[in-house]
Length: 282
Image (cartoon, rainbow, N blue to C red; front, side, top):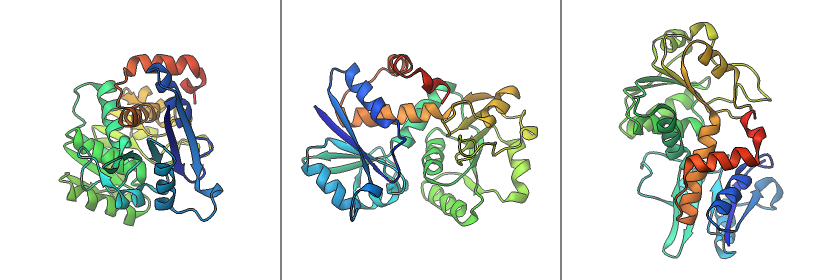
């Protein structure tokens, strides 16, 4: 049996359990996956909860908002994780110590290559500098983006991400509101890493009138899968990648880390949509 879990705050709507259980079934591994919600655990403490999980036989846990940054400070990173990437969303408990990974980062790159092949990202304008924005931006750097342009309504947070990316060697700049429209028009790729477009936050972070000259777009939102932003981007002739790809591949990457198995992404996609057809629409 492979005992897994998710640590986070307000995580009752997470779809991680059903993905990991399905991947286990594909590999002939019985998987249990528990939701360890800090809102429901008295006197919650991250290091304390991780210690309990390790003692209780968990192979590893996923870590989500708002504990990814704290987890990175506590846990030794796996070698493939850039040193400057200050967030961990996957923790593996090993006899020689705990190891941290960020499968949002590697999952974004795997999803991008699956969707766009060897197409270079070019110059990319990214909306949002939060947790998923951090992973996506480092993923862009890993994919060889020529230049990464960051915009966030919270300018301090945006500048912080820019500084972090520069420390990792990226060619990056912050884009202020006054320069945003021109940056969108001139970009090769557009990314939404804000909550705008989610079922509870309808709309698009980018004016559809600015779309048309770019090559590709990605929306980290996956509920719904087809967001207003991606609908407009596709209508304007852009190739698109949905937020489901990030959810799907970060989950596969995490399961591979936990189990040591290698997952066929195409086969897993078929199995997942057969089991959960509603995931196609979010």
